[in-house]
Image 1 (cartoon, rainbow, N blue to C red):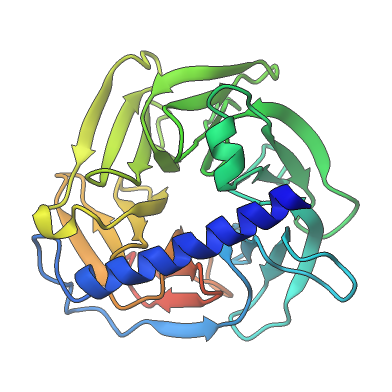
Image 2: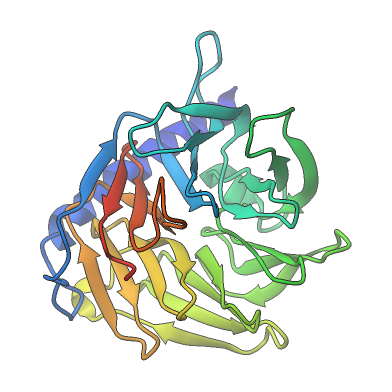
Length: 318
């Protein structure tokens, strides 16, 4: 209980701290103008707890994790995986009682890969005594979460390569973890300090990682040679404390990142230029691309925030 309390207090402190940074940076551009061609963001939901990650499946259903979700009688501090089938649809609770749920990805069978142990205490301890892991969750809500891998540093960001390899990040750590298709874990696979959101290109050649603390930036790791790590994109000085969090990639190789310290969503083009798509959001923590013709549709970008908001950016992925 004490550890959960410490983690919750630390999480709330991070949210407050990023609000302060937002006051400084939220009205500034990280060296490039806001994309004025886009519609204003739509607030779809609010009050859903401290939201950490988000993803959309081929059917246009949106899945997200809340670190402070609790049903009646459940202990606060344990999180949940939730689903929305339509922006105005009924909220579906898929799994509860997950300790600090983190990143999301889809497995080969369509089940959700959900990180857990995504808290500041776990992250710090995870550098020398990994205790986070992943579970599998049925996207249709059948059965309890199925434990898969433990001994991860934090499982903050999760990405799955085409060959089934899973990568997990620790934004309070020094390295990215790798889970081989046979389940073996390499806790020091690639040195990327403060790695957070993760994304893999369509060819499975490169892993991209947001780096949260320090001068925020995006690193690119060559998967076949993880010692080859390069700075892929870095904002100008006005965005140096933007605290990049969640990350995704589209079929054209463009990256979309949540800059929670700046209250912005960024698109990083293949030539590495950074375009802010929205500003003034309340600590956006993760971003997903819409998929399919209905529900959370292709062409739109969806973001979740530490303040429990789900936001739609119409046309931002066209």
